[in-house]
Length: 74
Image (tube, rainbow, N blue to C red):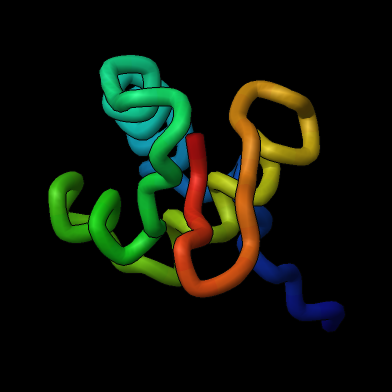
């Protein structure tokens, strides 16, 4: 039997966390990137799950990303 892995869109919390993250990021200053760990703490979520969700949102163009020491999502 082939084991199926939970993709971001199949996870039961995916939609709710995606919407909440988008709301928070829309209220933040666009010039300042918000690290995923801060978003995860605020949303009381698992950071790894939230990073998978944010990567999908970034790939689709809903949010922007910045890498490096001062990196994060905006």
